[in-house]
Length: 384
Image (cartoon, rainbow, N blue to C red; front, side, top):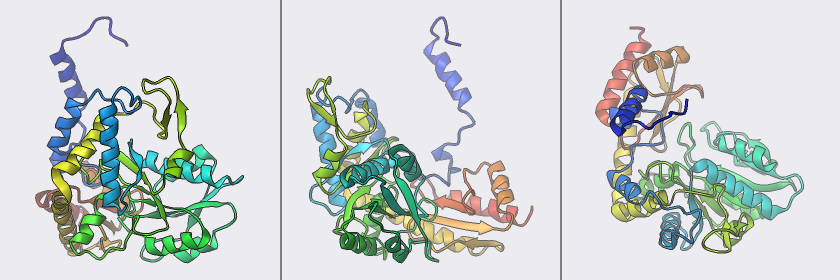
C-alpha cells in the first residue's frame, strides 16, 4: 500500500537492505554468467555527481550533449572510424533495434526482411516484432560462426540488411565479419555488427596479439555497430552504444520533439528522457583508463579464460563446447540441468538454458573465485 506518512531514511535503507539480501553481488565472486560487472569506482563518482542530467532535453544540458558527442567520437575511433554518428543508449537491445529501424526506414521495402545468424541476441526478435521486419535465420558452421554461404542464399529483393555478431552471447564467437562485409558490398546491403560484448574486448585483444578477425568500420560494408560500455567498459548500467558510419542512418530514425528547451530537437533514440550521467561516465572512463588501461583489463580476462578452459578439461565428465575466442568459456556435462541446479544451490549465478553453462570472465571474477567454482563443479559432477 502507498504509505500515509514518510519513514525515516535509515528505516527505509534498512528495509531495502533486508529485501535485497538474497541478491547476488558482483564482489561476492558468485556471479559467473553475467556480461555486466561492478562498475569502476570512478564511474560511480561521475554518476553520483551528474545524476540530474537529462539528454532527452539537451537544450537544458548543452554541455552534457557535447560530452556525449565526444564519447561517440571516441567509441567511433576505437571501432576504426574517424567520425561516427550515434548515441549512448540504454543497452545493446535498444542499439540493435535502432540499427534495424534505420535499415528498414532507408530500404523502403514493403515486406522487409533481415538476415541474421541463429546465434543472434534475442533483442532482434523484439526488433522484428516491433518494426514489422521478418527475421530470416542463417545457419551456423560447426565452429558456431554464421555460414556466410547460407546468408547469401537467403538474400532476396526484400532484404534490408545483414547482421553479424562479434562476441555471441552464448560462446563469445566472432563471425566472419570480413566475409559478411564483402557480401554486403556485393549486394548493396548494409551490415550491422552486434559487438555489444566484443566491442570493448576485441580491439584490445587484437593489440595483445590474439588472432581475431576485423569486425568494425575498418570493413567498408559495416554500416553500424552496437557496443556496450556497461559490459567490459565498466560503466554503470545502463550505457549501451549505437554507432553509424553515415549521418543518413541517424536522420532516418529521428523524430521531432518540438516542445523541449532546445527548440526543434530531433530524437533518434527509443527513450525520450534518458540519463545524461551515464553518457558522461562513458566519456570519463575512456579518458580515465585510455587504450592502455582497457588493454590491461582485457589481458587479465583473456588470460584467466584460457587458464579456466584448461582446468575444465581436467574434470572427468566435463567438456568444452569450443575453445574460447574472447573471455567467455562454455562447457557441458551429462545431466546438465541437475548440475546447474546443484551449482545454483551452492550459490553460483549461472545458467544452462542454451544447453551448456557459460562462464563470463568479467573484471570482478578472480582466480580464487574460479578455483572455488571448479571444486564445486568437480564434486557435483562426481555426485558428491
